[in-house]
Image (tube, rainbow, N blue to C red; front, side):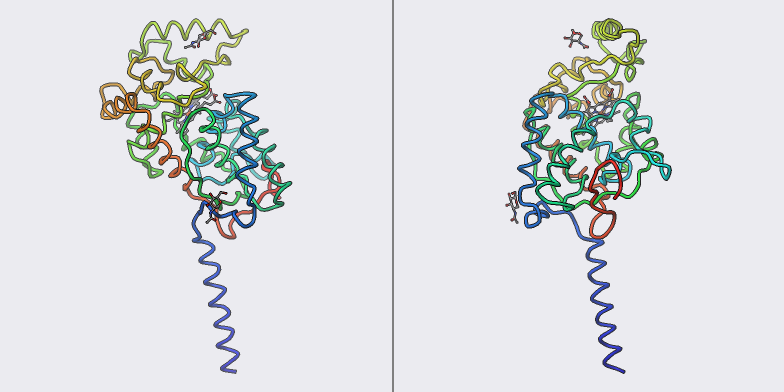
Length: 321
Ligand code: HEM
Ligand SMILES: *[C@@H]1O[C@H](CO)[C@@H](O)[C@H](O)[C@H]1NC(C)=O
Ligand SMILES: *[C@@H]1O[C@H](CO)[C@@H](O)[C@H](O)[C@H]1NC(C)=O
């Protein structure tokens, strides 16, 4: 009896240790080295094609990653289509009709499934594609930590509540990011993501109507561009986020200093405030910006991942298995 009891106890203990270590297992760059050695080559090759065809897609995937990670962790939840069981994140206000790249992630996922079936999460594919896209537009590279699993549901409420809006002031921005563990320096570096990509005129309409922190000639140019390229709906027109929207460089910070950026939230980083001196440093030192941006992206990738036995490895990124 005693031996049965102790072996059962031992077994239970072993199981417990296994489960808790799985639950606490952290991300690792070599997570798929044995199970999917071709992963990084496949994702990189796919992104080379994608970015050659449409450079902006690198920006769109970067934003997709931010919007996946920030509300409730890097868990692929933004990729899920709406079902009768839950409201989607794609349809949340900050994402609806503006987050793009879902088709690109689906296509990379099917390429990855061909080389390693049911092994690599959608969340990890987004993290790798983001790094490669940034790098392909001339930005830094960084080592992507892997081993995330995919969520079983989406959280529209969190997406609406936690993603920052373009009219935010500095205090709101810092608060929004502090809640996720980011410093003011991180916020200033991460906002440099707006060195690539485009935005819909509807997101910065406030800037063309008496915002005193914008260069007035630039505001007129925006207004003109937004109404000209509209085809009826000015809010749908696009403007480049900085003067070189296909180059991941530090021109965004020079645009901040010139007060020629799209969003109030951007200009808040350089408007006689505490971040002004860092903005000046980044504008003068692209290498410093690239290093800080890369470090902050690794940090973003650590936001609340599902690991071990939580969640699942989705077979299709847009739906749970
Ligand atoms: C600081 C607070 C932020 C605010 C208020 C903000 C807001 C926005 C808005 C309103 C757009 C335009 C979307 C559209 O019209 O389709 C946009 C675009 C973009 N955002 Fe942000 N964003 C912020 C931070 C970030 C961060 C941290 C990243 C990534 C690290 C990021 C990456 C991007 C990229 C790359 C685009 C261009 C997307 C494209 O061309 O498809 N943003 N952002
Ligand atoms: C895992 O693979 C990556 C990329 O293929 C490689 O750079 C790294 O050295 C490998 N790590 C280990 C621990 O084998
Ligand atoms: C305005 O439109 C021109 C011509 O399409 C474009 O080259 C330029 O980047 C636009 N500028 C802004 C700030 O929207």
